[in-house]
Image 1: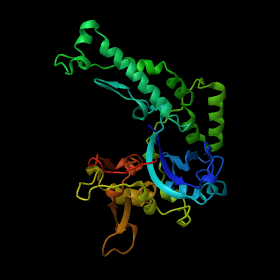
Image 2: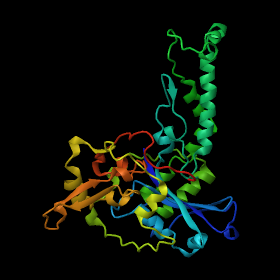
Image 3: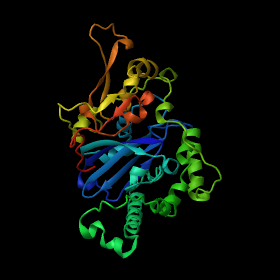
Image 4: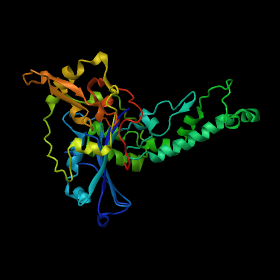
Length: 369
């Protein structure tokens, strides 16, 4: 599987500046600085009635530079003159983030198991070229419903008479079924055709860079329609794509102005995220990898979790009595900040974090995202 991190804001703007139906997708600035840059990602900007602007950045988590800060890249993008104008006179009212499973057709798991099926984003039907998955999710739900219905009525009149919808009870003699026809029907649907068409596009960017990736995507989506007789497989975990920090230079990001751009903790308040103070931390270091934060993440990769987390959960602080060197710092996990994006469990060096389920009701309280 390959993943992307999406970071998003919602703005209210003056109605006279609103353009209902306006849609804009961009590549290039700020994620790609050259035609062969292999960082995968882009941005979106939508105007939505009555006076909202929905804006965000998505970056593939297979990026190599550990100094990249997706949140800061998003804030920097908003300062571009052609983007900034959409926020003039407006107010940011909401902020959030989540990880997208972008592996597409290559990464689809087995879709059925006894008593259930995987649909929508749970399975991974996102079309990352379109930055869209709601249409495929809806279709998978429709096919699942049809397949489950056929499985429930299979068995004739006696089975129908004893169905739970009629009796209100689940019979102890009822066999737990695996609706394998669902996966068969998905493979025959336009969802499979659409994902097959773009199956190689993400990997084309990852292997060859921005311009070759664009050329390949144009070829696949407009000419070959996915009929090229090869497959570009994503064979490495996103965590392993991060390269040592000594191969890159630290990135200096502009100071937020508090009007168009914001510091992370200010924006985090707009997510409404909340966890009870007395609950156990749901973000836990795997016991067998307890040495990774200080000995590997900090020393080799310059602690990328301080930058890729869109909620400021991870920070390295100097221990009391330290001399100020990097070896004197320890990891602090501010689990109460977590917006449940799941980025840390994917991009951490050696995947050292075990993301467990927090208490019910905790996390972000999105309203207009």
